[in-house]
Length: 576
Image (cartoon, rainbow, N blue to C red; front, side, top):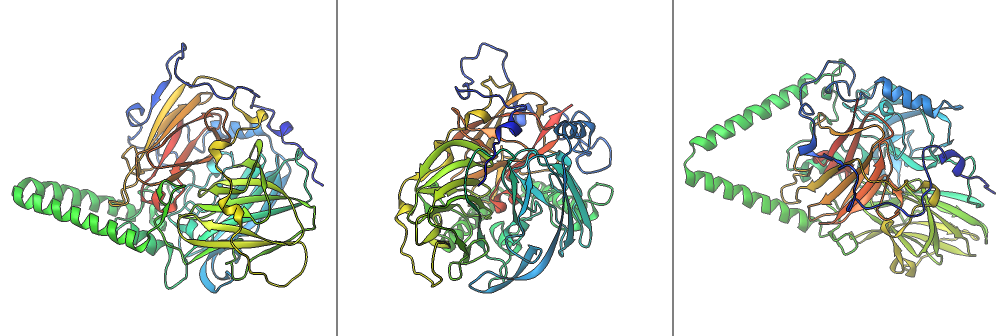
């Protein structure tokens, strides 16, 4: 039996509050600072202060990932027992059940081998890169020191082919997390693994634990790769600046390499030529050119929709951009599912992780109701449900009391007409054909219906700063961005240590987006759960509050890997 509690670990720095979050309206205190493009400091997009490690090529008023402020924050967490791991990223052949595929993975398996530690432990992991591209390792959801966050060109240099990188930090907060690259669209290969940080004083009691990782799969099927998929979606426009996958994205001195410089020069030249041509071109020709461009945009949009007529009422319309040949649960297709064994009456904790690149998943356990206990690693007021909906990057922990028999853990690729499955079994070995569990169409729970557990609620407080982030772009033009600006590594949305920050996420697009913030958790409104990833439906808005208590440069981005790589990401930067 597990008999632990999280409260002792979280007691420092998180105060209990019974009344949830206060709204910003009606405040009689000082007005919060404005954030966003108009609230950026004048030098926020300026020239580098000095060459050096990534993150140091930023104006001097911002905290560097390698600065003393970051080291001081880590010292306050304190070192714990060191847990040592080695991880190798390599090209390999994987058996996913229905077939064997050539892909990239950690230690030749998918998902990668689980990393499990106890809150307060120091993780010391060496990543060795045997891939044909540079890579990094991002620790999704962990509130860790900034220089270990794994964002190439921002918190570290890319780990080149044949090289290694040592990650070392204190895993202070318990929860269900996972690891994946933050380089190009590598996430949509087999490069992911669960990361479980156990609570030394866990309040839940259970007999067994089942970690479930969901994924959408195309790599190595019919010649498809995520890079080719991205090129098709992106109409050949290329990836986001400073976030390229090859070794030219950053040289050994932390400055732009020749490849990136040449690309930028070519783009500048092309822009100047286009402007000159537009100035001298007759009006009729200009109109004709514009009409032709619009026609091509419409044709691309029509082709995408014909190739992927994916719609979901739950997601507010268009469900995704990519049709996948397979959907996996713990690396297996439903033809050859993973089997989890338990005894009748066992209380099982299921930790569910959506590691997909472009797919939301609806999840239910046939014949059972689930009790949700955590989301994104943080406890909630327990809530019963038949089914869950997870956007990419989200995690849920649930408890079930096992009945006697054989039951499907049924997974629907929301809006895509396909499914995946694992099996919970108390007896027997023979394969079973399952009808669609009625629980998939029963009560459905999403994060906005949950409340944070009292001991992890933010202390009610008016925001010191409000940052407005409007998600922009369209499936027709494939011009995904935040506040109309595609990602550049020099972007900074300023905050200061100790501030209560409100980020107003506004989805101005016709598609849903799972928005993820690195290095922090935020609170959903009205006492809602603590999260690091939230689903934002088309033309909806959500205000999230966070305490700026982890200095450095932190990514904010859509966790649809094709949207983020196209430009829908930016950086929250701590000012000195």
